[in-house]
Image 1 (tube, rainbow, N blue to C red):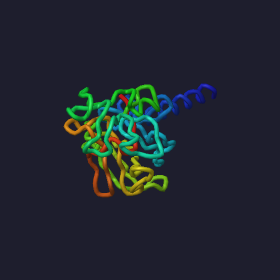
Image 2 (image 1 turned 90 degrees about the vertical axis):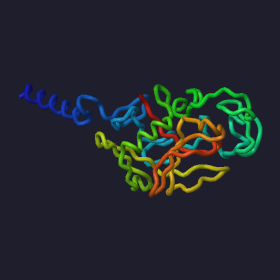
Image 3 (image 1 turned 120 degrees about the horizontal axis):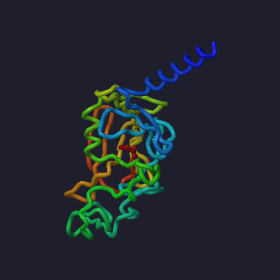
Image 4 (image 1 turned 45 degrees about the vertical axis):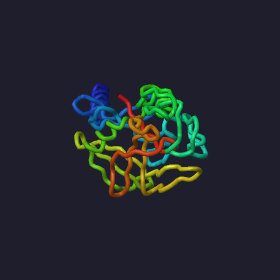
Amino acid sequence: MKTKTIITLVTFLVSLVLATSINGQSTSGFENGHEWVDLGLSVKWATCNVGASSPSEYGNYYAWGETSPKSEYSWENYKFRVSGDSSDNVTFSKYNTERGRGSVDNKTRLDLSDDAARVNWGDRWRMPTEAEFDELWSNCTCTWTRKGGKKGYKVTSKKNGNSIFLPAAGDRLGTSVYLAGSTGRYWSSSLLTDYPDSAWYLYFASSDFRTYIDERCDGRSVRPVTE
């Protein structure tokens, strides 16, 4: 009887492991206390935004290249601003490809020290690149739905059927949150090369899902990825 009990327990544990794997590879797991899901793509995607404790929570908002949330989002208090108060005249101390916009360093991707995912979650977490956002929407089916009472997209892999939920957290401009519940705006780590006042982000609404560009000083969501 004792032997049969042990065999039954082992069988249960094996089935549990197999239930979370495909072809011997885990389809979900944790890194430094934060959960990821394998969508069969080049990176694994976190199940929550930075600052959130569940997939449906909005989490924090960050200006591009800043690693802490704040009460107001504007050019005047942007971390890498040297001077100027609009996208037409602002100059930068870092991430600049254009003469007349400050010191040119030709950096077009965030250093990990300026990456909100890496700084807040540690380990190998980081913000996705523009190309990784493009890979996401090119290889997944996106369904506008609700989760935990919040509207957003269920993003389901065409490769293995796994999914994540991206809440429509809107964004922060000045001291206000705009269009929460109807749009989502998630920063990538990629600068717009020709116009360094802007960076790439994932934009979505109930009938739209694509990458776009906007001003670096705006407060937006961050959804980490890991290798």
